[in-house]
Each structure stands twice: as structure tokens, then as C-alpha cells.
Image (cartoon, rainbow, N blue to C red; front, side, top):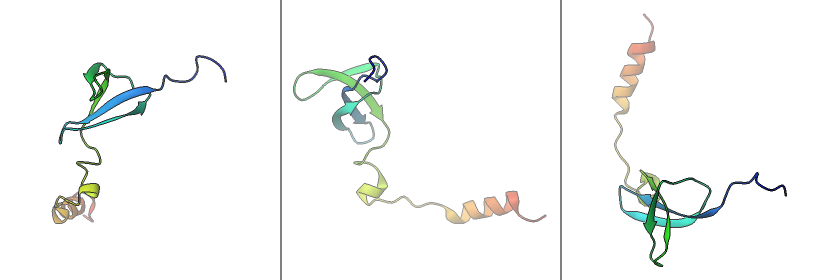
Length: 81
């Protein structure tokens, strides 16, 4: 392999801010913040809005979507004149 062409793979903490779930995994993402993990070491911290612990598909809690309102909006915008 050629040197200096691959990104640096390192442990990173991903924190779901909506449900305070944290996951330590390997990533190449750059982070500006750091946080202390359960082992006492400092790792880069990346905050995310949604994860498997808060996503409706995995939790089974679906949100109701106003489908009728969307259809009417579409018909008004693109319907025959």
C-alpha cells in the first residue's frame, strides 16, 4: 500500500443527543470535541441527531404523517389548471 493516502482510523464516540445513547466505534471522521469513555480514556466525540436507539424503524414508535395535506399541496402546486 502507498503511504499517506489512507485516512486515519481511530476510536470515536458517537453520541445520540435525543436519547443520550453513546457508542464507541472505529471511524475516520474528524471531531472537534472530546469526551471520556467508561474505560477512563479520552476519545473524539461526534454528536448525532438520530441513532438506532431513537430511530422510529428500530424503536417501533412511528410518527403520524399528514399524508392528506401533502397530497393536496402537491395537487395545488402541480395539478391541471
